[in-house]
Length: 282
Length: 282
Image 1 (tube, rainbow over the protein chains, first blue to last red):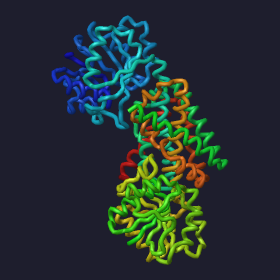
Image 2: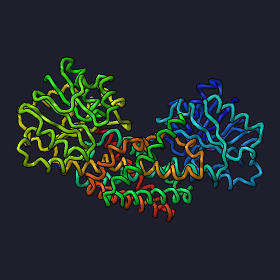
Image 3: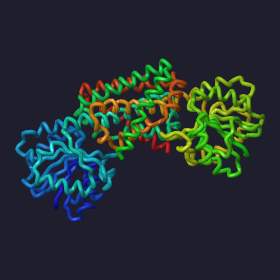
Image 4: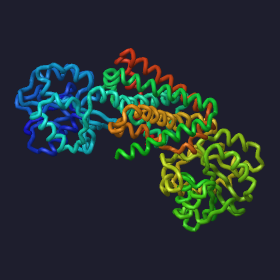
């Protein structure tokens, strides 16, 4: 591996750059960002070694790390620019539409659909750090449609970054992620909004917020530039998750309203098993 | 301070015992728990020095640390048992009903309504630790109704444990807590339930759960024995918070359904300010 090009130098793209440069000190990392400030920061922080609009013809890997709604156009454009020995992978949080878009593209074999389950509530190059991807899950879709030889280049990087690979089809990916990622961002944002609205009457309301509230509302600090497009791209699955969530809230509300202590207790007790399931996964 | 009696030796009561014994090595801490296993564990763990059903007449402080729905009866019973130099305070998450209950009690001056904003998602004496209360907020209500001299005993303990005191009336307390604590527990439990329901079709759904999901769903591990009574005790305020939350979710759902990217972006961006507010409070 000699040359990597990263488009989008925020939290994820930036962390891939820092991680790659630490593991492969000789590698040249070029890159670009539509925001000139981000591009400048990425150079200062050593995320990339050189600013470059498009990948060189001899680039091994191109990483697309821009918001979900920009990835389709960017992928098509970048496929046109690359040489025969280049593999492109993206880091988008939705996979079905992208895979459909390039399904019969003449260069389909030079693309790998990827999604690392990694992030924080912060964004931009300054939020990036080399260890972000360490021991995180990397989901790969439609692996059989990518060239075997080119795939090896991506695997070399994934292994160096200590990513744990998982394989699934793009529709399954999008359906799962709506529940275990997209929905929790919405629940967190809406919780934040509800308390902010209350603050208009009760100025000191946040004085009483403990670590439990901080934990539940943490994701409400996330970047709208990243998240608004995801919610639109994965709309159908998210609406299904959200409708289930609202129905559960409504039913639980009715139990509280009816003073049904036993019903509330039993429901909470049965949900407690999520603790074992999550701890098992560690 | 020579003698403390703790009724309810779980996470909070147990942490008060451990903290008090560390700061005042000479103090005698007696206590009881309706669960014999908890009582035995509390003795083994050194939370109390002696098991005792009711406080001795010369006890300085009695701490009531049982679930919210048991506190009223327990407070009345314990007021009957104590000597003239004893102060009782409770640690309940709701305050208005308790304060109303004892409003015209002849021993009202021997009671202090308290609520420490501290806890974890775990429960029982084994979850207790001496530092749990360190630098946490302790809300006190109707301070003027407690005897000045007896209050000093509580202050001595609170100061030793490094608690930060805040004062408000019980109704304000219950209204605030519905939003910044009780609602986030409900949102977390319902999120857990929604994903558990989905798991019935998609067995591997939790493989894709990242740190964001873990953070949002953490409170769903909380004890139903503690939480079901709180939701009933603070029903009116919680229904108001929950209705606001459901309305926000429904409106946001409609924006997603309509594909309103700009509306979603703007709403998320305005909620982002919760990050600054929470960081300010640190």
